[in-house]
Amino acid sequence: MNFIKMQGLGNDFIIIIDNENVLIKTETEIAKKICNRRFGIGADGLVIIRKSNIADAKMVIINSDGSRANMCGNAIRCFAKYLYEYGLVEKNIISIETGDGIKCVELYINDKNKVELVKVNMGKGSFDGKDIPLNNKNSLINEVIKIKEKEYKLTALLMGVPHTILINNNDEYDVIEGKDIEKNNLFIEGTNVNFVKVIDINNIEVKTWERGAGATLACGTGCCASVVALKKLGLCSNKVNVETLGGSLAVEIINNDVYMIGSAEFICKGNYID
Image (cartoon, rainbow, N blue to C red; front, top):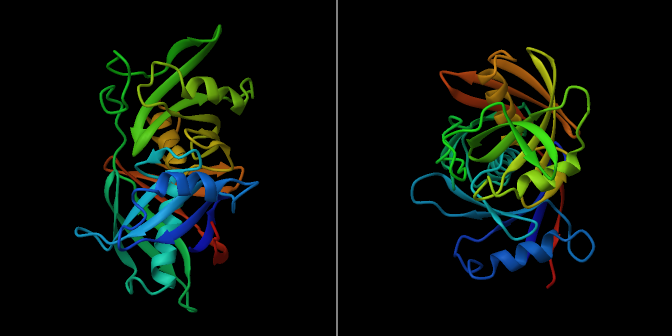
């Protein structure tokens, strides 16, 4: 199986092409094996390129534990760069089919015909409890929830995938605590957990515990969700620089649509032998 490994802000992915859908029945097990950092190649997730009848390409994302994700901000930037630089598309504005619908992506291409930055319309965030989904709650906005005898003031929303925001200005919480929040029965399908430090209205820091992957260096949807949540709480502007452990993203809200701009990089390529 030929593969390419890529990363966006340190969030790393194994990318393979499966245009004939031959891997559909085994893709979950393949993801768990290939993403294992001791016995496989090692990655936060497996990203599969497939043909689409409604967009330029279809992106399938499987987390390192074998669970599926409808959307991933760092993965879609890697995906788009791959499509262009390997000649699968020959234009700088492309459409990508995801589990969260079709995403419009703009590529910033330099004079060497390489993709420097990727801009993605991530869609709109939703605070509706049915969308997230929450267990018997209409919404969860700046509400104190007790988990394992500890209190957390949480805000939850759907930003392609479920996200929960916890303001952590004084480093009072550790990212590992996201494990218990992720699996709390309040969240029907689990949740990603973002620990957010507000520097000022235009700059924030985000550390993320990702559902199905654990603590990662960055999460694109998490960065977007954090900005949407902070905007809802009146704590940031429409345009925010987001610093993560793996680098920075620019996130902007325009007419409630969330736009993310960031980089993506190739790491290596090879042949996986099962």
